[in-house]
Length: 329
Image (tube, rainbow, N blue to C red):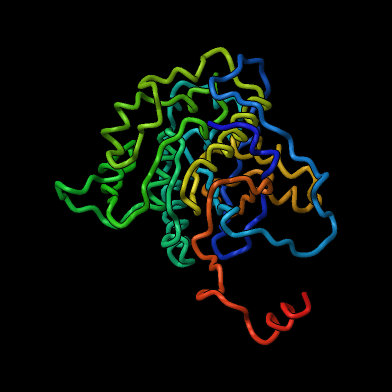
């Protein structure tokens, strides 16, 4: 991942029909505990308001300096049922790599209906998912293709009944590509629900998800007795946003976790109006979707516009104003 770009990025909530809120209970923020620095630690610059125009009103940015991201928290997992009542329940080994509940799958179906009705399903260039069972189930359930047929040339995004889902296979046909990324995992350590399986196990359950960016088959990031600090989660999240700028895709859905989203987004937008800051960083409900625009204020990126047009083709003075101005010079 690259570093230093976050100091030149701002978040803007994207007001459109793509926003979606679930009424499901929210998972409380995890407690702090000491932890060694994770392997993706980078130097992230804090946002500075020194070059911001704090006056109210609209602000313009070149379109090719922006990315639209659709942030999604996974649907209800089996760990949320007890954990939202008693935080200590998240310590239970029975919730290892927790899968979705039947209510969670209903939430997935509702969000899927929303992204199709709003037209969002046709705009997504890439789906990034945390490599845990509940996030991958949510990702493929919401953004995957329609009913799977057993074709040798088309791999399913999810096999039938993967992770005790009691669901049929989900097709990868006519769906965006899916990419698993470790950096957007939940708060690491101690809680068994946040520990992943071996990637080789996931390959069987989610054949069409791309796991090529994950270097270790085993989960070497989760520690039974060491939990990330909230500052480390935020730094990991900011590094993840840095990395998004290395992607060519312009509209990306990211299916991740409550703690990761809260701590990452809370580290951004300190120069905004308090209501904007609250809108960006408030806790996500299960299966909630929020659309935002990331803007690179540095203007040093290499991307060029796909829609800008230089004008004056063929070349020559415009008339009459351009010719008149030319005479005056």
